[in-house]
Structure formats: structure tokens, C-alpha cells
Image 1: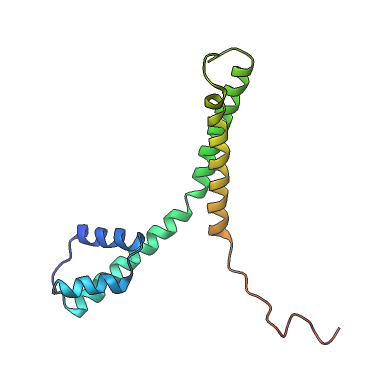
Image 2 (image 1 turned 30 degrees about the vertical axis):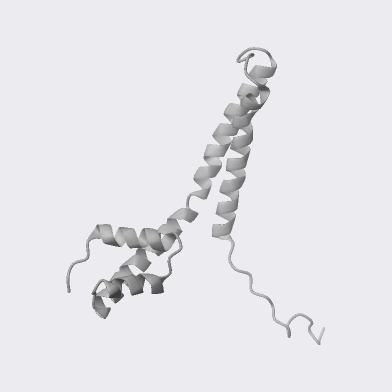
Length: 135
């Protein structure tokens, strides 16, 4: 069995993350002349890295929230200074208020990503358990 280069594994991980199915990847590898055992080993390595990347993406929620908070505070200070006539009097108001609005959007995005990561799937109680015949 030959050693598979890291660049090839990284390319396959990128393709999988961007929507290509494992069956398509297997088909391409089979056409390139790899044996079924090599394909199996390569697919396992790709799957482990894809799962690792997916887990890392969920950890970015608090980072987005912090960046949004910092940007919103800077935008708020800039907006107050603009309305007081201290700085940037020649700029349009939308340009001055946009850091604050972008910060709010980043905070909401970070909270959404964090909530998706932390919310387990809810399982229903089932048809029988919805109404108990005894009370």
C-alpha cells in the first residue's frame, strides 16, 4: 500500500466540506487506479478530518460574539462623537453608524452559531406518552 500525500487528503477534505459526496470521491479514486483497501483507508482519513473541521466551526461562535461586541462599542463611541460634532463631521451618517450595526449583526451571528452547537436534538414524547390515561 502506497503512502497518500497530505496535500491529496487536504484536497479531498476541502471537496467533501464543499458538497461532494463520498460516493463521488470513491468513484474518482477508483478511476485513478487505487485499490479498494487504499480507498477505504483514504476515506477514513478524510472522514476523520471532516469531522474535526466541523467540530472546530462550532467553536467559533464566542469569537464572533466578542468581535461583534468590540465593533459595536467602537461604533457606539464613534456615533456619539459624531452626533456631538467632535469628529468626522463631513462623513455621511450611514458610514458612521455602520460599525455599530455590523457589530450587532456579528453578535447575533455568533450567538446563533453557539446556540446551534449547544442545542441537542429534542426527542418527542411519542404518541402514547402525550396523554396519560391515568392521573
